Each structure stands twice: as C-alpha cells, then as structure tokens.
Amino acid sequence: MGFPKEGDTIQIHSYKHNGQLHRIWNETTILRATKLSIIGANDRTTVTESDGRTWVTREPAICYFHANQWFNVIGMLRDDGVYYYCNISSPFALDDEAIKYIDYDLDVKVFPDMTYNILDEDEYADHKVAMNYPKVIDGILKAHLNTLLHWIHQRKGPFAPEFIDMWYERYLYYSK
Image (cartoon, rainbow, N blue to C red; front, side):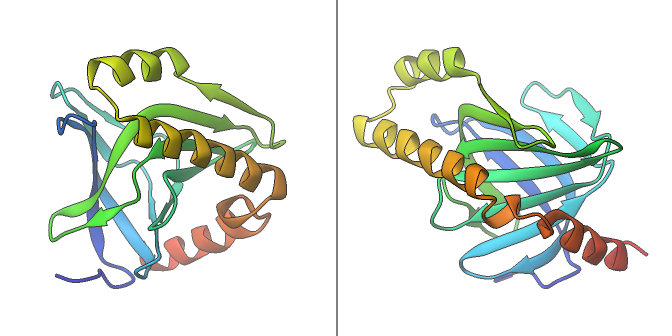
C-alpha cells in the first residue's frame, strides 16, 4: 500500500509493550501523510477495546502522529473548545492494515486554556514492572513526555492556535 493518499480511510491500532492489541479505531480519514508525520481525522468512529467491547467517539477529532516523537496527539473539537488527549507512545508504524503504535500508558489531557493533567502514572508504573520496560525505553518515554509538555507550553505542532481548525476544514472537504 505504501503511504495512504489524502482522503483515504485507514484504521488506527494501539498495542501494549507486550504485543497485545489494546484498541482499534475503525475509520480515520487521512488528511496528510509523509514519512515524518500523519494527520488524520474521524468523527463518530467505532472503537474496539481489547476485550471486544465497542464504543463510538462523540466528537470530531484530529489525530497527529510523528515518526520521531514518542507521543501522538488527538485534538477533540467540543462546543467549549479544543481538548487534546496525548498518548505517550512509540512513533507510528504504517502497513497495509493500519497506523500502529505502542501505547505506554502515560497520557496528558490538555484543556482549551492549555492547562493540562498528566494521567495514568500508576498504570505506567504497574506496566513498567509487569511488562519489563527496558531502562532505555523508560528514559526515552520520560524525555519525550518533557518534549510534549514543551510543545504544549510553546503552542508548537498540533498545539499551534490554528492547527486543529485548519485540518478540520480539510476533513469537512473529504467527508462531503
């Protein structure tokens, strides 16, 4: 398949460090795909959990994946502003099936005023032991958490003021 083209749809697959499938987003529209980054969007897409339960996303979301960063960012468009959910994760991989990454538990929720909360530190500590995260991975993840927080403070990349609006407009074009 190579890189998907703008307007194509693809799944997103999240895995855990032990290789277990964690979560699948059924359909995401590609807005931009290069070797360095992929930007996609979805709205009311079905999400399947590892135990088979399903749910449907509630609002439009712009998804940002980077080949050199150990995090991905989902900007969710809500009535009161853009909320971001950031996963500390491996850089993305792409194959004929999906955009794929390893979810390393730590998350950052960013509010419309750009304040944030770091989430799931207990889950990270538990999985670090249970799945035997190597020290080098632990160091990479902590460094990239700091990079992510810097991006938030600096309004860089997907946190830039016009980023989500610009890509949402592109999504609306493809969803007609």
